[in-house]
Length: 634
Ligand code: SF4
Ligand code: SF4
Image (cartoon, rainbow, N blue to C red; front, side):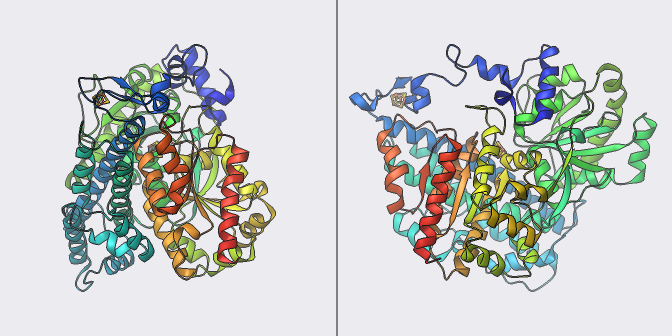
């Protein structure tokens, strides 16, 4: 298979060869097998256009807008495509919020002294509580409990009771617009109910109202799920602050016991690092014949961890994003794969059998065929559960070492990680002025929030993401990277200071002056809400300019799953120029396509771009930024 269809990264391509030699099923071959004929990207034209529905027993139905062919119930192609988009968003919102629920539960139990964690950022606790309008008097524990009560009561507000969290956190200009459009949300649980029931057969078949419903859900999700989640995780585990981190598959050393927390929730990962840093755990690993015990950060759980905690020999480094999963597992270096609520593939048991590692779900959400043992995360038991997972790793070491030949000499490099609004502000001397000054002077044309996954559609893992990033920084656009796309940037070397050589002259001078890379590693896809908060601060600093008028764009060069689709819808509701690739499954819906790509600027200020060519796509983003600069008179 052509290298560009496999991965941007040499490490993944190398392990792909091993997987092939071992005759293992793998994501690249399975992707190709789904294609029609010899074209791996060609699928059923109705499915690809978003005009297929099997919600009820009169289906499956196919719609064709050109001849007004509708589903049996009478729904149009536009209605079908938007309804399926909304259903994807419901899944995304629910899953984001599951994580948030677990975080709030962990914060509550920590405040009561029941977990191995502590309140790491009392200042953040106070500032966040103040922003939510809470009384900040009393002990830290009391304030935590007040914050948890407030958040949970907001999540549980009815859909027709406006969310106090959104009211307190969103920019004034957006709130007014969302109220006018009827998309100012209530509590997230009520919004999920409202959105899901709208999608039932013969309830709402009108693409416009379904689109508004999707935006409303996305606003609830960004503020109640994403921001509350990330800020509570900051309070517990620390704010992201810039520091170096080893990345790429070379962080896997077969001579060590390697335990990999994987998914999105970092709780057991952090609990394991706390233990692995103790000499007695290193001794246990050495007694088993290993050189030591390491917790290796993986996918988004790993991303949550590396943004906040620095590396050492026990917390050694970060592998990459979800598409590298089979490569990680086939490295012959993994002892335990610890799977929380997202991003563990159904294929993993077959890899566990072949490459002799233990596969352990640690969330009630996660299940695998043939895997019975599990440890559902409970905050009160986090330390015991973490110890059990590490014991499994130590006990597995000999079995794995005797039976699996590891892949050696994989590449490893350093990335700078840990940018957040607070740390960006701190590195700018406590004010956004240097950043705004660079934008105003024109050295920096604008900022792109890259929130992306990784997908095999049209090209291999991270290939399009890296091309897009290089095109943007070449045009003096600073990138803030989130999600699995952030891992793409880290592993490709774009989050290292030397990457300024790829940047245009203006951005290069800003990087040199501030000592930062041209791509700032900003977190996970859950940090989209945090980015919205930073954008709100920039809008405020520019005299409360409308979000849609700022020289800022959202960029998703390789979106993949349902959490990503709701992020894109939020970016549109927030008023951003939103670049999305691959082309979403809406092309058979002309009314919806017109809404997203032409009419939306007059509604929310947002607009969707789906250009597949990276040069033209980057030109489109720059044109939008330049038009906004002109509008602002800069
Ligand atoms: S809901 Fe409508 S379009 Fe969907 S399967 Fe039933 S009849 Fe067909
Ligand atoms: S939504 Fe995308 S970025 Fe987030 S974890 Fe899933 S694949 Fe990664």
